[in-house]
Length: 278
Image 1 (cartoon, helix red, strand yellow):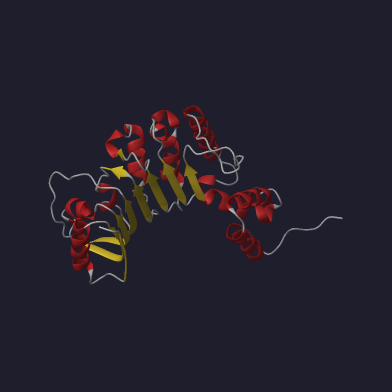
Image 2 (cartoon, rainbow, N blue to C red):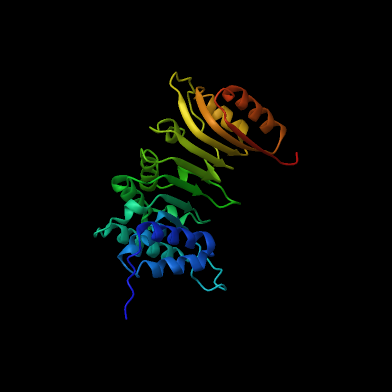
């Protein structure tokens, strides 16, 4: 006896969404992998959920044994990125690049993932050339060892920069990154949500006031608020920020936050502040 699995699409979507909500990360991944093989009605929703958020890092795969706490080797990282690059380049009935909505790049202490040999630029180029749904790009450096944007190899840097200009991009986030080019934000064609966690823009040689309005849907600054005011707001004074979140760690941050609020109070709709002990 066989049982048909051609359920209404709405029921399948609710089931797939519920898997991620009600199961843990490992069980959710295993269930989605199984769903992708059940039937045609389950295959596409499951693959869309599996490929919607991509994390690239030195950490072991989610399905590794619990005792596996070691990071990948450089060669293993390159092999994994290469395999994923080949997978999204193998265009079949479904272009997997179209399913990717978020890409999170976790930079290791050796910065191996940024090397040209890693193939990261190939994934970024595929997104830039073929994606229509890519919305979020985040990059985080080692917590105890922030890296400089200028230390990124040229090929990888160019791919990263060009990817940020995708019209579909809506969220841009950096953590523990120094010297981010201001052009990545001010030249974006659509409103952005920008997150700067222990990260700073590069110093601009000739800051000037622009007459056009830059719309940031939301802004989150954790530390270096004074530097944000000096390096970004001095260069781009006309800001439209609707949602602002800041972490205040000293009096200089507090002064900079107050100055920023005064300059954007006409358009702010929400404000969150986290005050750390001075």
